[in-house]
Image 1 (cartoon, one colour):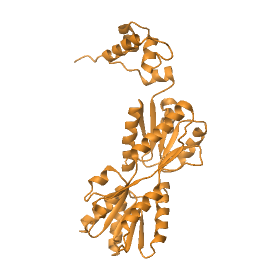
Image 2 (tube, helix red, strand yellow; image 1 turned 135 degrees about the vertical axis):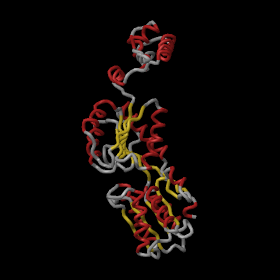
Image 3 (cartoon, one colour; image 1 turned 60 degrees about the vertical axis):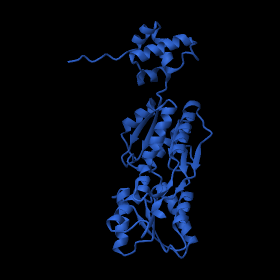
Image 4 (cartoon, helix red, strand yellow; image 1 turned 90 degrees about the vertical axis):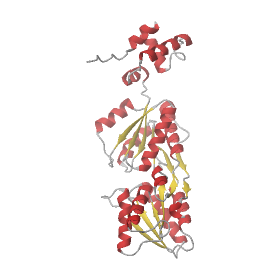
Length: 342
């Protein structure tokens, strides 16, 4: 049996480079030149030795020596949500670009989590938190921390008027864009498939729809609200089943999430209903799945890249200086018109 190779330690690097262990620490945490006036030649020699030996400092060493972990934690109510997945992908790219690492904490559809695990991150493992949570319990927990200047940013809801920073899209504007596209002069009926009304973003989207309804009094609107027992895909399917059972299938459908729209499209295809021939449909979020739908799904695209970079910049500003000039940002989404609604 082959003997497992011993992992290189800090002393090994120090011996190979002919320096002390302290110098190795300073080089690896980036303070060698600026705070300890170590020469460029020595820094280069230490880095070469570390690379040759495959040495990397442990997270505990970083915490002890610099009080910085290099970790940003994302706390999500549900990492299986396609929109959250898009945000995570862009956030991970942004953290790598800035020399940080991303840790994921999944609440699995709830707003509770192991207190001991979350406390470990709060007590030092994470330099900042980005919260992508649906309910208010965790937000209340973090508001006090934000008042102390700790690095916290919320995605997916506007936290203006509180101590928490946030990045969010203009849900009202996004809904207006897609409704103006779907509601042509010949459109007599529109079906709305809503996510759970208890979510902040759903409430904003429904407010926009209700205002739009007053502008088109001759168009009939019918609503289906996602049940607690349904995931997003199932709610889209259930809405179409219900409307078909009552012979009330609308001419156009606006689903308040791409996964919801995909569920509706699947059910209509099974029933022999053509898209967009019989029913035109659009979703919301701009996830990658919308491009792969058949036909490709019209959707309101969130600017995930800009939002992820902004959320991270807010966290890093707060972590490094205790303040930020960004605070509460709202981004305009973009309507992507594809074959499902043409």
